[in-house]
Amino acid sequence: MDRLTIFAKGNLDVRDTLHALRVGGELRWNGVNEVVRPRHPSTVVRVRHETLARSDQLVVADGEVPAALAGATMALGPYPLASQYGRTLFDTPADAYVLSIQPDVATQLWRHRRDGFLFLAYEWGAWSEGDRRWLHDEFERTGAIEVDASMRNYATLVERLRAVRDAPILIYNVSSVVPGDSVHSHQGLGETLSTRIRRFNVALADLSERTGVSIVDVDSIVARAGADRLKLDAFHLNAEGCRLVAQEVVRILEDLGALAPHEAARC
Image (cartoon, rainbow, N blue to C red; front, side, top):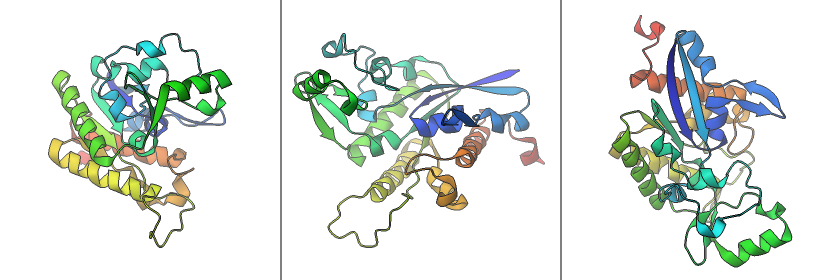
């Protein structure tokens, strides 16, 4: 049995499509091996997933948790300190790496007032009063990251990965269809979520042109199959959406030689 290892650094978009989708504890989609198994019966894909807070935090991660967070006990859910500040992405050999721009589109971080490091305070509103007071005393909000800064970060991440491993790098874009969005005039609105997503998607295409990274075009996949049918909310897909995205990942890996061409495609 051949084994292909994918290191996926991202949030629910990459986890749900590649590893598994569970809704209310019920398994709805069992990951990329559901696509690989009938196409490559002798191959099994191992997906190692780690959450991504945002690119600007990852690009400066040195593997050390900041001293100001030593002994922190607040619940950080899927964003433990080891994930936020670790270098596992760069230190783990894999046959392919998968990233996503979704964290940069959606996530706002906090910056330490004295030391300047970034921190994802997951669901801080549910913390104890003392922990919330500590957060506001020690940190300030950073706001959303700008698209140009984001793409510079991803270019750096791509360069670092290529310096340590000759393996395909895939980056998910984001579906720009936002359920319930009925805006027809943007005058005075500033940047909406849908326009922000489109700006990031175009910038990612430019990054692909410069660096050769492969885009998993979630935006096109959802558009072709129908957002009303596939999307649970602005960022999350149902089982059918996960299957279609996983199929595209497999197609790209076949095209890049990480997986052998599908027999049907060679006929």
